[in-house]
Image 1: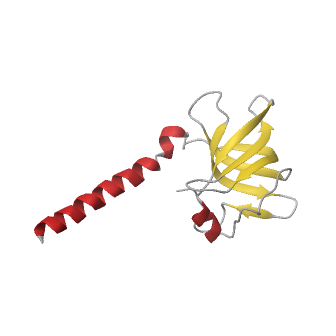
Image 2: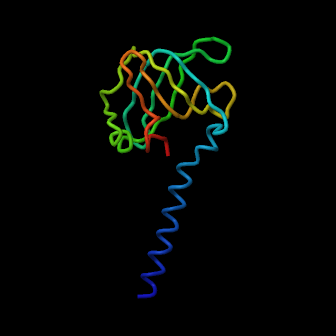
Image 3: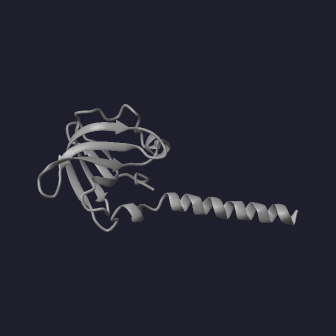
Length: 131
């Protein structure tokens, strides 16, 4: 019985370590900064472990770039009412995100998203955050 208990404890610790390592956003994104991107949706990839929004928007110098914005997984998004059909190519959207730590990499972590034309939004309600 003691061996089973030790095994369960060890397995739980290892699983927790793996989950924590997977979610180390601070290693990829500068979590102390936020950027605002306004532009057209190019692609919405609704998948696990993380959905992605690709947007054509200006960088800090005003040059149009294609940005990859990492979002939550489908379960968390689904719990907020987001489905694979919630966003469409060509939608004008505004995203607040945490930028990549790599200079010149047009990648960011979603903080919130708004579609002004109809008021669609994510990131302002309880539980709507990437984790």
